Amino acid sequence: MTAVASGAQSKASAERLAVSAIFVACGIGTGAWAASIPLLKANLALSDGELGIGLFGFAAGSVASMQVAAYLTRLIGTAAATRASAIVFALAIMLPAFGVNLASFTAMTFVFGATMGLIDVTMNVYASELERRWGAAIMSSFHAGFSGGGLAGAALGAALTFAGPFVMLAGGSLVVAVLTVSAWRFLRVAEVHADAHAHGSRRLGAVMLALCVAAFLCFMCEGAMADWTAVYLMTVAGVSVSAAVSGFAAFSLTMLVGRLVGDACVRQLGRARVVGLGGALAAAGLALAVAMPTLVPASIGFALVGVGLSNVVPVVFSASSNHGSSPAAGLAMAATAGYAGFLIGPVIIGFVAQGVGLRLAIALLIACAGTVALTGIALRAKTARS
Picture 1 (cartoon, rainbow, N blue to C red):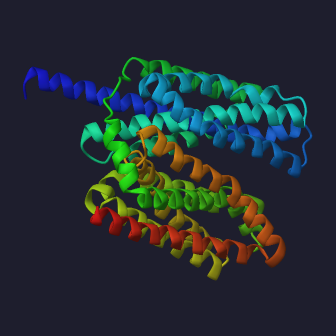
Picture 2 (cartoon, rainbow, N blue to C red):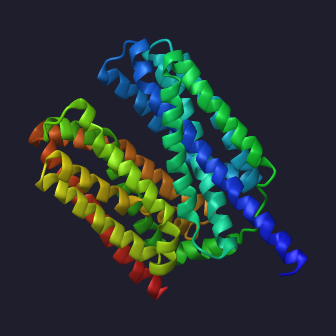
Picture 3 (cartoon, rainbow, N blue to C red):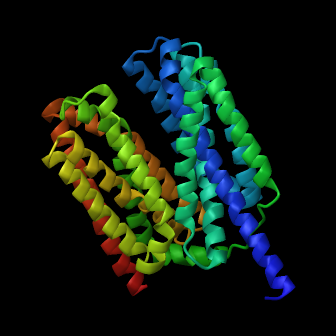
């Protein structure tokens, strides 16, 4: 290897590490926020319903800002947009702690959620551009960093619980800022061929639709896993509060592991097969949890859901950047669809559970995961024809 080639490889590796740091930082901020929610609820004396309104503000802010993120990326470039989004996200992490009542808390979570939407789109656009230049599937490794960062952020928040929610969130904000500054100079402008993307958007509109459907349903399942697994194990399986967390823990752990090996799976199987097989595995896991609603089988089922869904979003985000009018536009479209699913999914489960019971409501997710599997088949057919 020549000195020039060695230097280029070193720069590429440093750039990949920097992008990974941004993903980890985003996960840490999200994890610290999640860990602070019970204390914020207690400090503001919010009911469950009022907390739901506040959390809706976060999700709504995320969805509202994603098209803004696409515009920002086109306006100032991917690297600059990623840097700016990461900095405002780091600062905004502390905002929910300044809420003094439901109205101000919801306003703060909306702004914080908006910064989350910005960084989510910009960092994924950057990652997809880097993946194209890298010449191999590497998107899942970035999302593994986000998952690992989420666990680290939750642990950091838990360690700072004694100091109150402001310190919990400030700790997360500080770590995110340090990681962002460390990665700053290694982020560089990438060449994007807009005409090729625009042509692909017209020719492969059905592919973009399939990607958005897969994102919506995958995030819908993920949101339900986050909000309803513990409740399911407590009310349907009849386990204790402490044991009920095992369902989501199993889901989160296997999702992290799945993303760590995801790039190799994509290289061996291809994107469409990863989506199809992942959706089928998630459907099987949900079916197990519904058919055998006791602690161990249900937790194994939720673990299978984590494995199955782990690489659907990385694959969908990577592919969507190739099929929009621009990488940012395509990814923002898929991300908006995904967050809409994350926002709507838990609410739908709640309404269905109110009418026919939580067990049948969770069974509804089997159809969602099965449809994700079908989108994988559709993607394989459409990309083969194109």
